[in-house]
Amino acid sequence: MATLGEHLQQADWKKEKHAPVIQAPAQVSAGDLFEVKVNIGQEIAHPNTTEHHISWISLYFHPQGAKFPHQLGHFEFSAHGESTAGANQGPAYTEPSVVTALKLNTSGTLYALALCNIHGLWESSQEIVVNA
View 1: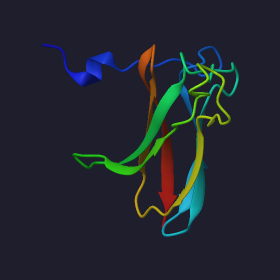
View 2: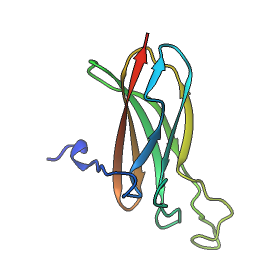
View 3: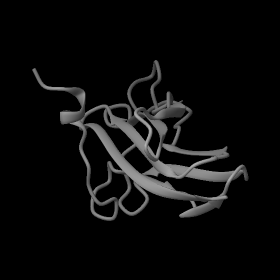
View 4: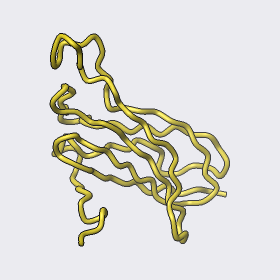
């Protein structure tokens, strides 16, 4: 039986519209608040329709040398043009983009996971160095 990790897809976000894009500083000072933005389709637009959309993005931090990552947030996108009038007739569309703020006390790696309702789970990562 395959593990979930075997189903995670990775790609260069400049060439693949499903890959999450993490925008965060490469270095931060310990305990200082900073922003992280994660979005989908930065270079190549991802559809946002009732039939084809990004359902959610989750953000994790894995401290260097630690056994497990920590979930920083889970962000759901629930409006994709659905309506009783039919698909793509609705009044609202949520874009797969999120900004959050955090503080770190140790270096490690940020991981973003995103779910496309048609093309599955996508992952990307970015290392962050924390200066004392």
